[in-house]
Length: 119
Image (cartoon, rainbow, N blue to C red):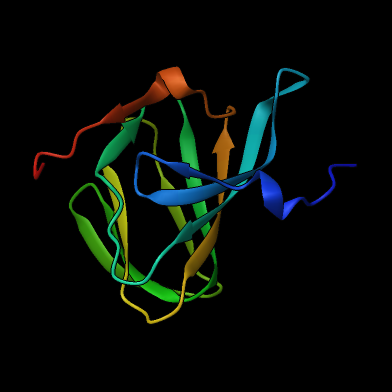
């Protein structure tokens, strides 16, 4: 059992707040985190090498950028991001955009690469 603990949320340099739900050496097959993007914020464009990621949108609305795709997303939508594909998301709402990030295999910091050319 992994207990929910909002106090473990931290700000990640990508531009969002992360609450790790599952990411451990005991289960390397998957990681699950809750991401929270504040209104008007766009995350930095980045790539996860060797890791496939899915965004399950829980609340709010936004625009997701996956490779050459730009699409509006809302609660209930699932975004499938292949390993090595550039990605970013912007919160277009007045409330926080909240989604689960489900990664296989589990996400490791060494697999994160910032590719944001705007900054």
